[in-house]
Length: 484
Image (cartoon, rainbow, N blue to C red; front, top):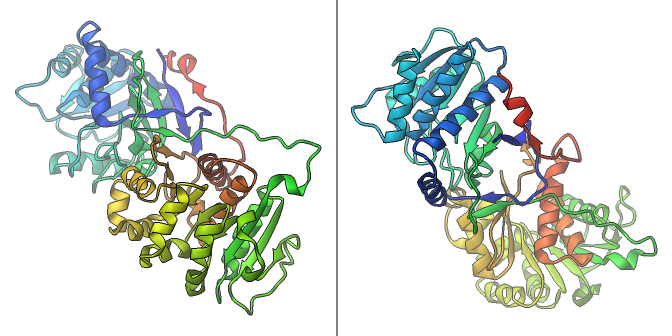
């Protein structure tokens, strides 16, 4: 039994499409596993894994502070305290005692008391590492004042914070964080990965993410999955520019030529054979001195039936008149930015989009506000449940959807939603979405399905925001964590 690192230092450390489970699924899995094991087994395994990770991440720490809640999350903390004290650490537990506990938590609390672990309601004056064992996956409310005080002390201390299962205050189904949520340096999550650890505010609160399945086999049909690193797509030596398809980028209304150029350059550099720039501003330049390979054409002179079209980047008001033809005629289509806004604002475009999506490859790439307009809701509602919002869009328009943001979500009709693990805040800048749309277009032009083109582009786009272009394999940590 060992823990392994899933995300470290803003790098995803896996090439697999790892399953992501909901709270309800994990509770069912836990109950099923507990019923097949001797009593108290899972909490003992969790406590030992937590103690080993603490020792591995803070090997020179002499004093460990553990803030324990009233449930099984707190029980894991008590269990870890017994091991850490036995290994020579000074351990202090902060805990508000109750009169009744669940059986497993009661056993671990009694074990800690019998081991002489210091237990009180105060915060120790000094400590070298602290453990957030307050609340796990079940908390969906703001922390009470008695526990909020401890969280404030954690953040103010400047010492490493290790969260148990998830940072207290984080909704692991959605990634929404309550005010006062713990911001951990590392999180050790149990049984299975949760979608909220990877999207919305999850990445900001979890820090480095570690998984320990506690020896329990996973269940089928996860709530979602992680977008895996795409397999290499080598090009045949005997190929030519016509082998990789033609992309036309339509947009660049007055004052927004940069958006269409960014998208077109991205399509070209992502491998498209030929890229046409259909700038909608009649006064726009007809040459790109940075990418002279780009070919500028009037939209009137392009044959949409033969092209992969990326529409919307800096499209402005002039784009609306072209959308009916693009929706009906283009061979493959990526809709971004102003194209999405036009669909939301023009009732006649919605049925055209739905009709084409059922017959031809179509990818929508909204950010949360654009998604909200398409769904007739608010950006806050979209962010509150990104998986649901992306799936609702995919079902409404029968298209592949890329809901951009922290933990970009990919969804398609009758498919398991996927969360992309790559990328960071460097992508939060103007033009980033235009680049992504061009990358998706290049994949479609090369013959990838809508899903594969979107998934590959999103993953590679995320890597571009990171320092390195490649990720490390999964780091099994059994050797490291078995030392104490």
